[in-house]
Image (tube, rainbow, N blue to C red; front, top):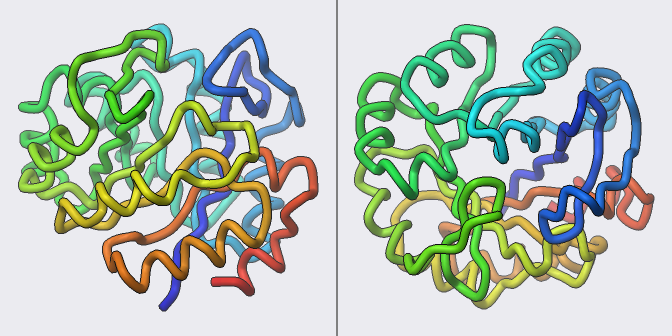
Amino acid sequence: MTLTLYPAIDLKDGACVRLQRGEMNQATVYGNDPAAQAAAWEAAGFGWVHVVDLNGAFAGRPVNGAAVRAILAAVSVPVQLGGGIRDLAGIESWLAAGVNRVILGSAAAKNPALVFEACQKFPGRIVVGIDAKAGMVATEGWAEASNLRAADLAVRLQDAGIAGIIYTDIARDGMKTGLNLEETAALADAVNVPVIASGGVAGVADILALKAAARQSPHLNGAILGRALYDGSLKPAEALAAC
């Protein structure tokens, strides 16, 4: 069994940062050259780069476009992008620019019809990001809570033709407290599309635990890697070897 690992590049004001539980005022800056960081992750052996426009997620429109384009120019591996993409024109623009997959988060929760339309027009290139607090969906850069259960949203959208779901436990994001495998596996068991775990990876033990969980929940497909990579508690080589 092989998992796909996605090193994350979160963009805030043009810099590469990591947040804690999505709090913009708790950003740790890890570099001012996101394109160089993306190239470094590719050189380390990762097969994807996961990019989020944090400013865009809060603003509801792309903000760090220049940094995203620089990343696209710097790597040859596929890039998936989320944050502030709210309509079909925005999706089409980024796919034309070279993004391999677009992640719809707030738009997916608030406008499911957009997901169905986008999947029809761009098959295999739309991923839904489901970000949850205590199992309930949060939107607009995680600033807004909803009364929608994460699992219900996943089931509602799986038949749109999405390429997968990224499930983030907000309480664990950036905290290095381990993945919420119980909730993530439960969601993966409820759908028939790949599910990528996000939020809390602290070291290689978390990847091995995910791999073990995936033996029982085959739709578990991979993980987003963030702070642990940046602070060195997880080495790229050991992460990839664990997969």
